[in-house]
Amino acid sequence: MVANPDVPPSRCPTGGDAVCQIVAALTGKEAEHVEDTVPVVFCSRVQGNVHDKYDYIGYGSCSGANLALGGPSECQYGCVGFGECAQACPVDAITMVDNFPVIDEEACIRCGLCAKACPKGIIRMVPKNARVLIRCSTKDPGRVTRAVCDVGCIHCKACMKKCPAKAISVIDGKVTIDTEKCLAYGPSCNQVCIEACDKRHILQPFVDAQRQAEPKKVQAA
Image (spheres, rainbow, N blue to C red):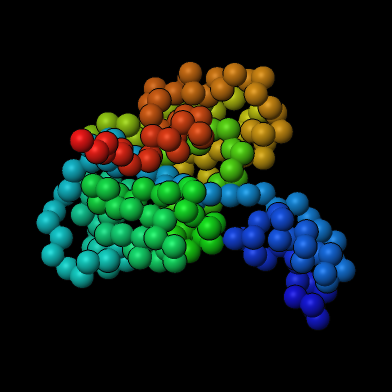
């Protein structure tokens, strides 16, 4: 960091922008703004009532199960559910609820290890100020998705057609939102992409999506 001028001062994801500014000042490098991010699970397997296509009896890891036809879930792009991400988390910020990872944003240190651990890449780091997100990673056509998931993206592209910022596109077979374009356009669009979506659970405001993902607290008697 000190000796190599090509190493940017933004290499600490946990420290975020505050640490980047301090490191830049200490090393005499130009500070760049670092967007605070949070990990998000881009899957709605539980809400979609996705069933298993077979009984898996192999080694209990996501990576292992993923080798067998993409895991036991009927959706080959969905969460496998063996908690490899939770095991990778150094601060126990991930709880497995119904064999599905629930991320505690307050406990999370933004290290990104959970995203690296997921063999399907469905956990991704998202800017904390993101406006909307699509909680689905399927590449299947609509007829296939409808058969296995009640809320999965059916690739109708209605959101793409309505988005005035042209921030929604299909990348690597998945409907994806370009957060930079979305934020640059601003809230004047009134989130018309959500209104256009036939599967409202997976395309929703980012804050609401995070709140829905939180485990329900049981009140003491």
